[in-house]
Every structure is written in structure tokens, then in C-alpha cells.
Image 1 (cartoon, rainbow, N blue to C red):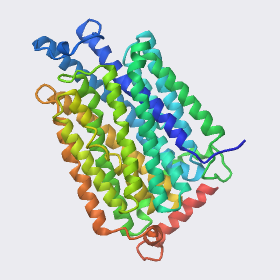
Image 2 (image 1 turned 60 degrees about the vertical axis):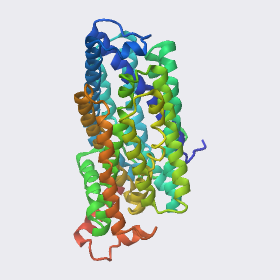
Image 3 (image 1 turned 180 degrees about the horizontal axis):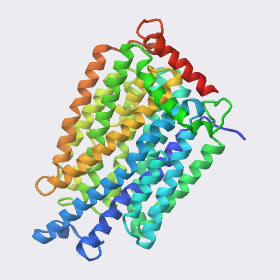
Length: 475
């Protein structure tokens, strides 16, 4: 059977399936909590005048539902985060020697379980707390961060040229955004036509299709020596996975370690601020004075697709004339401006226009991944992307917790405060990238220079640890 070195269909189908359900689950939780708090059905045909009513009791009801929704989604994220933190770190690092496909298939299984649990809860109006179990199971199988990290590590294995690697990783981000936008555009019509349950069943089927493609058609880039699944999960092997991540920073020059830490911190703070601000868009749009319905939310989410397309175009064009670090800085400034504008968007037109300054806001993530991938060895790609998956998970969940709490506390007096905070926090990665520029990344051969075992900065014991660990992986 012919196999392909194309991971883009995997992450594309995954993004479509995930974003088909994510706006839906937010709206489903919102309406279920409305039914419980108001003791009446959610007004599906509500008008803007109802939403913006000056009646204090109506306003209090909307505020209460907003607060409870953000808190419930926070609990769901925490149930997902705790198992996913450990599993993603182990799984992607494990793929360095046992194959990338394991870091892709297992998270897909978890997403199938998550989607089916939501489908059952929606179909039979079961207790809303049951979906927390689905979040926990999805995290236990690695979660989306493991799959995304596995796909980026897969691309890193295929690309030798540094500019090609940057563009190829930007293509992955673009595919995610493009199909996410298409999915978001269809969610409103899904809900109005058949209710909340069908997007979850559709997503489960798409994840199953994805598993079939990965298992039977995707070629492996890392050939496992004498693969045996059971020994790979012994306590000794798990210890080796953590040790390999540790060696990523210790078994190299001081300069490389410093650059990796600075770029990972920049990546973390960027994800924290960007995710925290953009995630609140839907809840913000549901509330007064915007009072958007399902269709408008779908249009808004689909319009965000332009951010991914323009960010890819930006990376493709800027990479021809600018260094990677300047592309990152342009993206950070773009994110800062868009989030600041969102804080003061009080009309539908202005909220749509918020996406204009955000046009390059996605550029920092793929370019930072590429920059870090260029300064680690080919045998360390999985460990590097495992660290990124771990940090991405921590930053997004902590960001969600912080911004959900802040939004719940400030929605009654200034609902745009969360966006101002997110915009301000973007200054931190800008400063960190300035430090990276000061240290300097001279060439595409930086990996060989920074990891040279003749530079005197890596001690013999550390080199010996790396050799012994490699021998254990091969055995």
C-alpha cells in the first residue's frame, strides 16, 4: 500500500473536527446553564433589545450566566490539563525513537471519546458534569497539544533547509486556521438546523477517518529499531523520556541553552496573552452590547480564518527578506494592536474589524517553533516539541483560568478589561525576543555550532549520559 509524507491532511481534518465542536460546546454550556439559572428555556429567538435590556434583573441574569459559563469551562480545561501535561511531555519525547505516529494516533482516540461523550450528553440532556469526564479522558490520551507537537516534529524531520522549514510550519498553521474557519462558519447553521448534538457526532466520525489515514497511509519519518510497545512504557523508559528532555538543555553549549529558554519563554507568554484574549471573544460577543446569535458568531469565527491566511502570506513573503526574529516581532505587535482594539469594540461592525489589526497575529508561533527546531539536533526534535507542547498546555490552561476569572470579575463594570490585559502582556515576549536578537542566531548551521561537543561547555559526564540514553532507546 502506497504511503505518503503528508501530515497536513491530518492536522487539517483534526482542526476542522475540533473547531466544529468547540464554539458549539461553549454555546451549549451557556444555554444549559441559562436553563438552570433562569428556570426557563433559553430564548433562541431573542432580540438585541432583550439582551441589552436596562431591567436590572435581566442584566443580572445575563451576568450570572456569563460568570457560571466561564467558570464551568475553566473546570473543564483543568480536568483536561492535569493528565495532558504529563502525557504530552512523555508522548512526543517518546516519538523521537519509537515513531511520530504514536504521538498522533493516541490523541485522536482521546478526541473520539470526548466528542462521543458530548454527543450522548446533548442527546439525552444528561448532567453537565459528565462532560468533565470527557475532558479528563481527552487529556489522558495526550490531547490536541500532543497531536500538534507530533505533526510539527514530523515536518521538522522532513525539512533540511531552514527557510523551507519555516514556510512548511507556517503552512501547518494556515491549514489549521483555514479549516477551523470553515468549521466555525458552519456551526451556527448546524445548531439551528439540528441542535447541538450533530456537530459532536460529525467530529467523532472525522477523527476516526483521521486515525484510518494515519495508520494505513501516513509514512513514518522515524523508523523504530525492533519496535516493541510494552517495554517502551516501563518505569525505566518513562524515566528516560524525562531525562532526554533534561539533556536537551544540559547536554549542549550555554549559549544554545540560553537561546532555547528565552524562545520558549517568549512562546509561552505569547500563547498566554494571545489565547487568553482571543478565547474570550465568543463569550464577549454573546453579551451586551453585541448580543450576537449563532450565525453571527459563526461569521466572526470564520472571519478569523483570514488571520491564518494572512499570517501564512506574511511568513512566506517576510521570510524572503527578513530574519525570523523580525517576523516574530511583527506578529507580536499585530496581536497587541488587535487585542487592544477588541477592548473597545461595542458594535458589530467594529468587532468584525478587530480582525484587521490581528492579520499577522499567528506568525510568532510557527516561526518560533522553526527557530527552536533549527538549533536542536535531529534526534532531539521530539524532546524539543514535547517541551513546547507542555508549555503550550500550561500557558493556555493557566491563561484560560486567569482570563476567565478576570472576565467574570470585571464583566459588570468593563467587559473589555481582559483584552487590555492581554494586549499589555504581549510586551513580555517582545522584550524576550530583543534578548534573543542581542545574543544572535548567526546561521542555519547554528545547530552544529551550538551543540558542538568540542566547545568545552558540555562535560564528559553529560555526553556519556546522552550516549547511554541513546543506547537504551535502541535496545
